[in-house]
Amino acid sequence: MPALDFSFYTWANISTYLLSGLYFSVSLTIAATIGGIALGTVIALMRLSGIKPLEYAALWYVNLLRSIPLVMVILWFFLLMPSAFYNLFPGDIGQKYRAEICALITFIIFEAAFFSEIVRAGIQSLPRGQTFAGQALGMTYAQNMRYIVLPQAMRNMLPVFLTQTIVLFQDTSLVYAIGAYDILKGFEIMGNTFGRRVETYIMAAVVYFIISFALSMLVKRLNEKIRILR
Amino acid sequence: MTYWQDIWDRWQFLWDDRGDGVTYWQWMFSAWGYTVSVAAVSLVIALAIGCLVGTLRTVSQHRVVSSLATGWVELFRNIPVLVQLFLWFFVISEIVPGMRGVPSFVLACCALGFFTSARIAEQVRAGILALPRGQRQAALAMGFTQFQAYRYVILPQTFRIIIPPLTSEAMNIVKNSSVAFAVSIPELISFAMQTQEETSRGIEVYLAATILYVITALAISWFMSILEKRARVPGLSSQGQGAH
Image 1 (tube, rainbow over the protein chains, first blue to last red):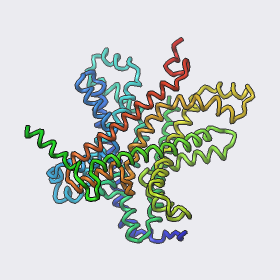
Image 2 (cartoon, one colour):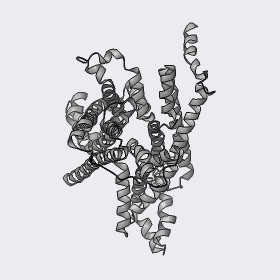
Image 3 (tube, each protein chain N blue to C red):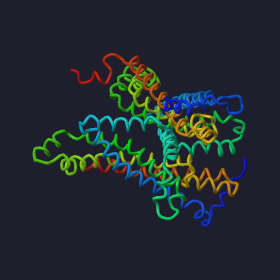
Image 4 (tube, chains in turn blue, yellow):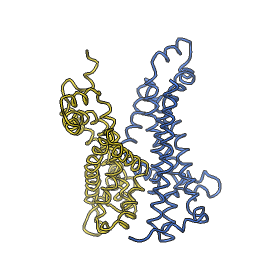
């Protein structure tokens, strides 16, 4: 068994190889969570709208994306994204960060399918009386959703959203398939540069574990808080 | 007429020889076979470990045992499956003596199986905790040992309850097997990526791979729904509750 040597983790090397990757992984997670919840809410509302074409469109969207591996979806988007799209970005940013931009869009669209199921469950878990009371007060559908249903549903869904965000954070490692520069890629390049793959993959696992575990502890505490409040 | 001819032509590459006597058509089905067999072997590993660990987590008399089981779940749940795969290929096979010659298929199945075992353990634990406490107490009152109570009373009921979440885990494991492309297992994603590079027929190749994934998912959900019907105990199903 070769001796492990972690001495190449100097601050200079960490900031050269890892920080930008970590920054991308974290911002991809945050952006995909926010974008996914926004788009997912729209899809959940379509699903519950009672208008058949909208309902079926939402159903297909969710079922299709849930039955295909995320890697396959990432490859599809990378293949089909028109080159002109990347030119919309100022300067050469679009061409330079093709994989990263494509990953961001893929994740928002893919995660929306999962968030929409959470939102749907959250809305359906509210007593129907809430909607009826809103209608009885003369609220329109939009007002009812905006002021009565969604605020309550979102509060109930907060722990589930966070759990999904942990899954999402782990899934960001799959941008490996199109070579986007995330934290895992940073570790891989570092390992190849210094010829120390064992140490870099161990550290990659440690970093992912610490972040995911810390988030899951947060979810646990949040769950306890919410329970006390009720 | 020419339109359909055009579409037909675009799929002709499937019958082309890759250069080693294997057509893309044959390669695609062998890749599908790899996807299914990686998923199946991993699922067996995951079920075996997951049931054991999930059960041990509920054994409250032995603190050490249940906290070891909890540690197992936290460890394998909080590291991405792709990173776990790399750990098996580049760390465990390097530094653990005797792991060097292990075939990559086995390593990939271990990685995927251990990752999924944590999730199945959680389902098993939730299933056990969902049973009424009286079941365990009645078994112990009848003079069953702890082991017998699990073997004859608790676990048979648990497995019936958790068939729906196990179905989605089985579908997840097929989807997660796609990460094996990163360590050159010749499964569907590897096939799709390489064929796309060699033939430039990206849309057709990806479409074929996607359809095969969807077919696999449908087959699992069909099989598990039959299993669920077979395993149902009359009067014990959740649908039966609240009938009185």
